[in-house]
Length: 160
Image (spheres, rainbow, N blue to C red):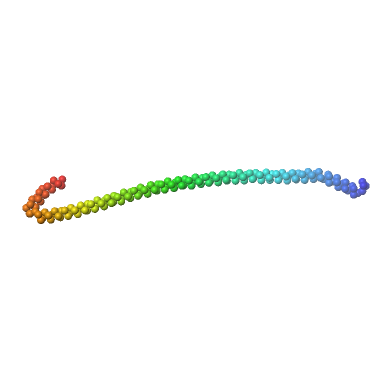
């Protein structure tokens, strides 16, 4: 057995493989360690990116909630402003209607006064015409002249 060439080739092969295995083992283990370290670094980077993404998502959700709150506040302020404008417009409309009603009442009062004045003028004209007719029919010339003279004398007193 020790004399056969195959045996020594096998022993040499085993020694070679054993001798080569140690450096190869170091090289393989080093490569595997580097690969494991690279994978660990990638996992750490992925974890960091995931945390960053979660943080960013939380930040955007907070900003969205804040924007919704601001939008609600803007809508509430707009409604309040619209209510104020509506109330102001209602007050203005009411004041305008009251002014127009007062103007209409003034016009009616003026028209009534003018109508009364016209009626009085007509009544005076009719009364004067009736008085003139009555006086001209019932007074003689001498008495009419005396009344006219008397009226002319009293005219300056009545004008002042």
